[in-house]
Length: 207
View (spheres, rainbow, N blue to C red):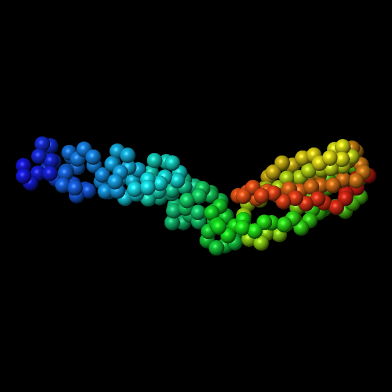
């Protein structure tokens, strides 16, 4: 018994993975990786991780999870290993994905113009594609666009025509009610900070 690390429990291998002098077979508070977290509560049994961080909440601690953010990309090849980003977009090509790049979204974008594909005036019934043009100092980031119209057909108040989405264009199908002078307002929202910038088009006449 003197040399048995589990004198009352059969354990011919004498395994004691945490080297605490008590065999695994009878260690009531086994902490295999000696990180201070008992095995029953440890989300990485054989890898020390006292913080128990688990970004994707899958029950496997980040320290032993090959894909800690569960976006389908292994940590070693994921350009944002701690942030879910299935598109792996990296607009500035620095190896850090847009979703976690601290360089992104530091500088606000500027809407330089709101331009139609067809010059004014146009007859009612014509489809006019309005495009928001912007400058982005950071060359990266995620932006959402919305369009609103003000003119005779809206009672000369801005009415939303396209809610926030990824498209920088709106297809305006002009109508008889739009006859007169119209304005299109574009709002661009920073997908990370929520900051919104706006720009109004030049007057557009529908005949």
